[in-house]
Amino acid sequence: MRLALRETLLAFRRAPLLSALSIITIAFSLFAFGLFGLVAVNIRDTLRHAEERVEIRAFVSDATPVEAVGAALGDISSFPEVAHVAYISPDSALSRARRELGEFSDVFEAGVLPGSIEIRLKAGSRDPASVKSVADRVGTYAFIDDVRYGEDWVTKLYQIRTVATLVGLVLGLAFAAVAVIIIGATIRMAVLAREREIAIMRLVGATDAFVRLPFLIEGFIKGILGGGLALLLTWLANSLISHYLLRTSFFDPAVAVLGVLAGALIGLVGSAVSVSRHLRRV
Image (cartoon, rainbow, N blue to C red; front, side, top):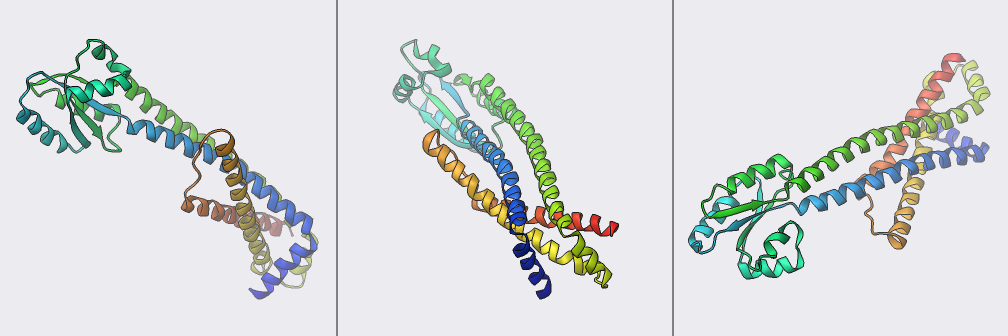
């Protein structure tokens, strides 16, 4: 292992320009993938925030006994899909309607707003089928005049989330494949640059494992450095966008570490594949 590390360091010293080119190529390939990941993360966050606004509002008939409303609140809060339920008095409803017209503008125009039960759902229960199921159950109470939840809006939001997930998956795989191809070609160039050295090592009896090890270490180190540089570039791009254009989210620390480790893995695998192909020809 010590000899392999020494050979790796010598390789960096003998061809610093080629080593730097390999690291930069890995970095920019992962940087492009990181930018796409950044877009995907912010789209996911935006859709999640929009989903958090999904709610059901059930309008209560006038002169409904407080006891009946209280009992209904207890029942509804026990629904597995429900995260929060609250009663909105007529005065509070009128005050809120002045700020938020939305689909309830026709009710607000009447000048008098009824009390209502406001229901917020748990994450994972905000799809159209779950929302409609809860709304239908709430509508069975005798003192409920109407139940609204913006059915069209919920359906479109769910469709957008589904399409965004599928497109993100396809484009993410495409970006990853391009990055692997570019990085593999770059590492192969480094291996070919040392073709004579490999041939001499084979002639003096070096085993395939002995020949591979320095290249594997070199690919791993280049992947780590390239992944770290890509992460730095992505962070700088995110900072500039947040400062000059719009507020964006960055990767979680765990995801950032996984990105650097992914660069190391790609460098390791690229080196292993390139050296193995070359050894079969020597």
